[in-house]
Image (tube, rainbow, N blue to C red; front, side, top):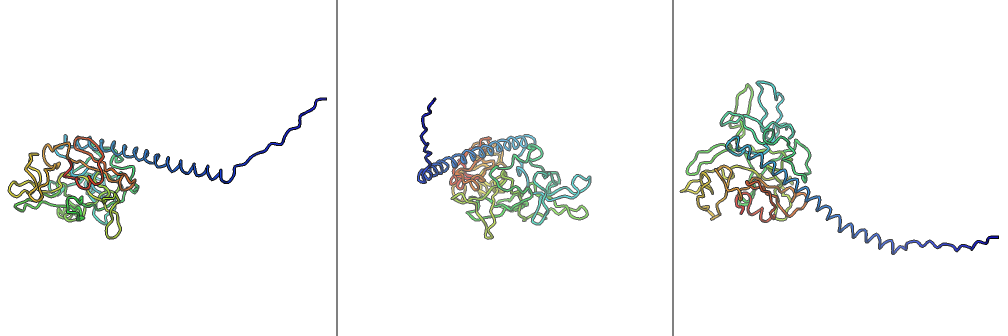
Length: 331
């Protein structure tokens, strides 16, 4: 007979409540450490996407300059009103929108319209030098409505910290400082095919909210997006060929930079250093700002504003540096 040894009962020891809480606490601590790191890595990737898009915009702007002999007045262009007969021979073209107009979705905008000054068709980068509208977008922009538009303000550094709307301007040949309006001031088509060159003058320019190359969130010193008296988010202009709209005059120092790119001294009012604008020939590429991005600061809490120089270099600067130096005093 084979005898079997009696087996001892097995004790299955369970976790105590204290041990379980300790494990949960360790997991929570690890998650608190790792999740921000993962979020930071993702944000870095999104910023890299923006810098890649900026390079594409730079290449498009250079091609535009080589083709036209000047930089475009806008990068993507303006929010465009719906034209019911677009593409029909002899019908009025689509035009930049003003308040109350139906809006063409950003992807379908043509950005070709007749100007009041020359009567010729004026175009921008989109659809010509840059084919994909996604190049003008920022991955941190939460707005996905292609028909959402906004008024924009000049950077506060240009207006003594007073929010000033960007509006359509026409030439004002007054002395001693002539004021130069928008070269792409549209000629609004009215009934019977007539045009009204002054229709747009004084009207706020409208931009697509998804366009983060021409405009961006207006931020304060903490990086928060500013709001107006009605609580609406405020956006500022980030691209212009002519920030002052004035020609330099040696006696009256109307502008901060001389004709043909020649330095003309310092500002007569505050001694500011010479700055560059795209309206002059051969502006210094390493301190001329083509555009900049504040979306990563306003949305993701980034501590850096991404700038694009005329040299094609995209780099990051601090919020305080951006607020003090952009667009005309970057060094």
